[in-house]
Image (tube, rainbow, N blue to C red; front, side, top):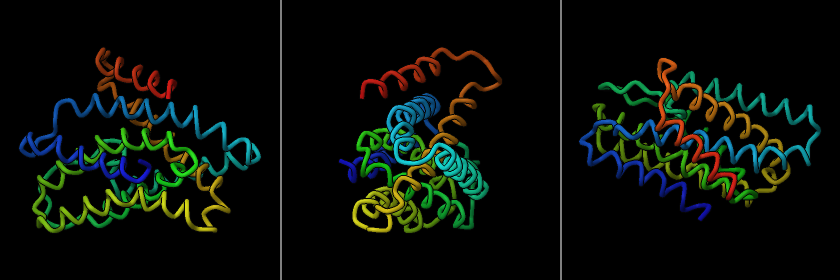
Length: 222
């Protein structure tokens, strides 16, 4: 399941978009809010306490901050696609920087799954709305079908690849706690950004509030 679910998340995201005829589904923001709270809660309940058992507090904080800064740099190229922000318009030039940024992000988020199998559910829920957004963007753009298939295919495989590297290589095993601390920073940045931006114009939205509460609650009982 650690390898199948991240791929299934991308497939599900694609299938949810196709029936809408290239339009962004109206429920995507609700799913995004749920995914942000669910991922944040799993990070706090599962990853964060374990890291502090293996690394000194200041060292842990330094690598978490490195993860936050890395995600900020990646978003400079991806324009915030990791947390639901991407300008959907017709593009003639293939977005290589977006592709590279998303691949790096997806690869790194696969590392904690090896030792923390519950995180695969957080990654799954996180990847579904992102896959929906990227699929909508690609379908709206003027890219060849082969490019679209390649983009989505590689994107789907990067997280399982990260898990495989984490599980099979000595180098990854040696530095896994440092890498996981970086991933925590990435998760914290993405999930909190989603939650802070979930209320447009600071208006109360009951459906989004319920989805956020459900995300936290479900993560607590996993």
